[in-house]
Length: 266
Image 1 (tube, one colour):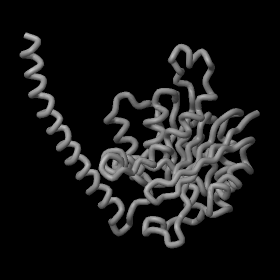
Image 2 (tube, helix red, strand yellow; image 1 turned 30 degrees about the vertical axis):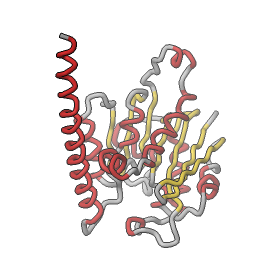
Image 3 (spheres, one colour; image 1 turned 180 degrees about the vertical axis):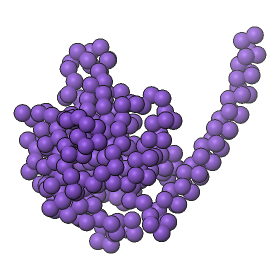
Image 4 (tube, rainbow, N blue to C red; image 1 turned 90 degrees about the horizontal axis):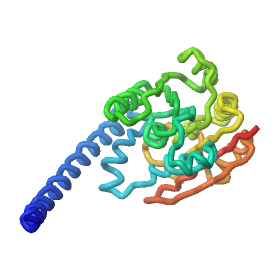
């Protein structure tokens, strides 16, 4: 009987494997086409739909660098938890997370759903926010206490935006600022980072990601206002506002990625 079952399984497994591989290829093809539409329309998008990264660029192009933007801040968030929570393997859903210039909210949704009590996404592009909302409906495990706010952080402080839209004065443990700082000039960056500090709790973590651009930027960099020369350039801006900083860089597939974490303490 066991031999017959093994024979059946040995037949079924390669059939299922072949189907799975071909379905994955077709799925990747669809996301590739959606990416092409996003980035080649007349008024092309300024945000990345990271489902296109996850389903197309990572498995079929080997572009995995987008994961760093979620993994690094999540690992550094550990200091906000007690030792007992690690011993019991039960971190509480207690953090307030701000996804600033959130785009499609990929990072706050997938890397903080299990430890966030509240997530707030703020972006100027309503279409980007809508993609995050749609993903929330499609995945039951994601944190449902997630608010999506269409607002301009150049004109209003985070405190003003949150109070106006949520009717609450909320302070955040973690602030994510992924692929956004380069869209602002120096004066705007100063306004935004001051706003960030005021919106955070007494102890909290700020995470910022951007790139070192080549001398001849690609066509999708035309909307950038600020250009970073190296990792120290980014850190020198962030450390003016935080008690301590930590800087990382990574070179993947010709892209020079830089990351800076800022720690706010009492």
